[in-house]
Image (cartoon, rainbow, N blue to C red; front, side, top):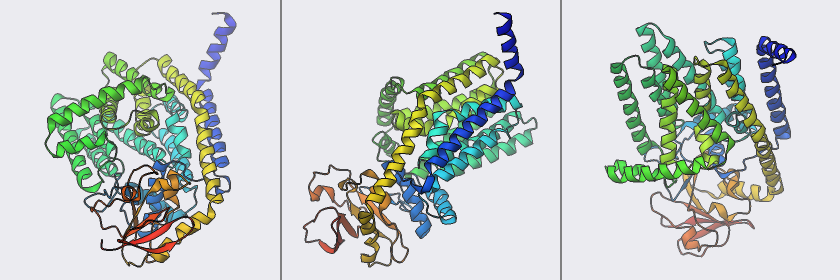
Length: 499
């Protein structure tokens, strides 16, 4: 190394804190620019059918105060409360915010940007040295999991914020020297995890961290019992308070309720092998970044046996195993569900006794990942601004849909059967529907997942799980059990007789 290069390196080392501060400020300014550009003139709307669930759940709750499902498939809702497969959490969180701050189509994006800023702020409340805080914050804000979901209607920005809360408690548990103090933090952590499981059931896997933080074998056995008890409670919660999952991989859980353990295990192992192969060969830079973090955490723990590394690794492994067994390994779905592992693993590695080169190397990997995924942020914004333009261009259709409550005579909650993919607007059509009657009673829409060229009998098959009151069809439907109550150039609305 030449003298000048050596001097430059020394300058960089001596000014590294300022460099990290400037880097963080630059990224936050960039995200702020993208945020204000995106929400300009409120020209923003849902673009993906999976976003519709959160968006419409908020509408339904703010209009009616109900946490029942806004929509369902083949009349499947929870046994208690008629809820969807997410349960009541998003209704309460986003619906309350909609009641407080209004129904702007950019409300979700504003909330997510606020959650993102608070998440970064929370990093600086972690009881760690300033350089570690800056390394954590910088590495986090350049990941796709942090940046992209700010601009969607998916709740990942919320979950990253909640992950920081749980991480904060784990650090307090790990560093507590007094048994009484540690037990209080453990109890608080368990209660919070159980509460947050109502928002997303996979939060229960965070209890595995308590096993890794156990200072003795007997303590580890107790925490394992707590974790297993939490899993059983979550399965019971899902059985009664969430709708049966539509995803094929998740339906195998029903075998457990039937005590068909062998069938459950065989199908689970098959799914894990298949999904793991798909994930590894996915070609997603952000997936590979997450997998690298997990491998680095495993390697550091193997070498140092640090408890916080083990705690983070256990949470990561059980969540990854669950996703491989019961979910999709396609990066679009996988990155959402695994996003909470990013801050956990980053914090664990930055807190470890590993060399500075490793920690700064992780930051560099995050920066490189951002360069590869930056275009996805612009694409997300463009798609949702284009979706708003489609809404504006479809105003006669939107107005016609909003007239539906005028032709509902019941003074109670009603159920409407429709075929969501009949309409030219696409999978986000549900976001245009009304979710309350004239009497502010909730409306539930049920659909069958079928091809648009199927017959009316297939499209509008009744499953007799719920009392369906009305049928909404793009084209006329002839049936003695139907009485047309309204029609426009966009749809035909029928009362179902004899249900």
